Image 1 (tube, rainbow, N blue to C red):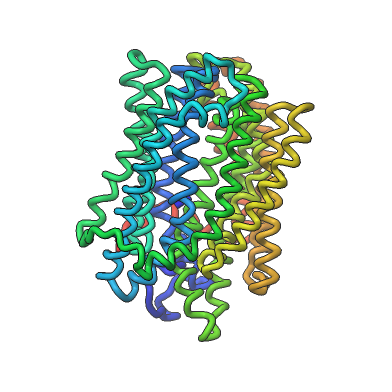
Image 2: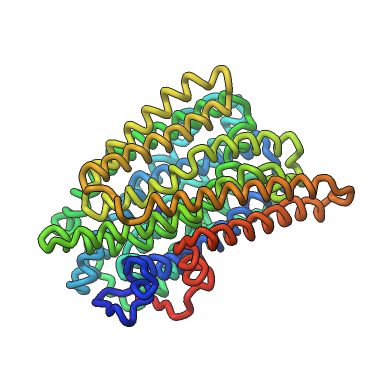
Length: 547
């Protein structure tokens, strides 16, 4: 998933820094300010992602054809994650950030080299995979019947070239984050989703399910086009110099990550293959539930994690020789507090409102009541691991910032082992739900392992208020959950809650009541992070500038 705590580099005065005046660590306001613009992009991308899933559900339901498309879309995503996606946060941003701070001309040289190599290597990979598409489809969905497997192959041949554009976009994103130009890359997923939605609506009548594959390819190309204006000052210096020291640094940092990613991608392939054996519609149900999980995860955890990564990288470079480790800890703690204050209520709220939310978003057209029931069940099981996944992201980035990519890779490999052991044990008695529970347990194990290793190697976060923030968020969330549940029961008891208006009421009224109760409880408990979130993230700072 692509990304100081301070919004800009440089010194800060106690008399002019709002964080210090409010008693917050200096980095806290910077996290919220930097995360704000990323969160705005994430809001757009997640909303358009929901629109995308709603359109898919309306046009095609939760059928075997949709499952075939899900499998076809996995292959370019897997390749991107393996070859470039994992490199963005673990290697590209730290290395590019170092050049951005000192040698801008050399930054353009290294970035140009990466773009050239990416275009060349991924083009060759795409050509090979076009020939091997039938074998790839079988590996990922061997449980499909022959007709559905053939359809998967056809869709896969359309989606494979998207990996070229995804990868070029990933390199551009890493470069822009290193330059602290957050606005354009923050909206790459939004334009991707917009492209898919537009093409599906325009071509579904002519192309059927293939319109989704064409839309995926168009959305990937739009990601590259969107980011080019932010690099108007870049000097593109074409090169394939494999001996450049910047490239060697990237490889050194990324090698442990890619080894872990290989194991992770194997796990994903096995997961899809197992899911294809639990029913043709299971993958479609799991995908809809995953979309709802990714909404708060991307909006909260990813936004905060990407915002703090450049500053963590620079503080990590400074603290070893200057005794400034406390700044690194304070930066990470600020990010974790923001994540916890937002993700805990989101988890409880989603659990209570799972059925009405899914009914509102998906249950129309070809998506029926039984699809809603199964998707809601999958969602609630996924939610078991949501909080762990949210705190895991900043912890992983903290290791990346210290140029330790081996530790997260090893923990990730162990996490895949947890998933496989649980999945194989539960798939026979529980089917699809066994796979979902295995995923949640994998997330729990991964986060707990990362937390334990951070405590052991870097001294932990005692004294930085993370535990207190989590306690206050949990207490406020429990009060919120009770209010939300009661309000949902009241709405369901009304006689006029049928149709779209009823679905809107079943989500909007309990959700609004829960939000007000949560904010009131945070205020009563004196949670200072709440003020940071609402004053700095949600009225997105107009003063933020790129670069």
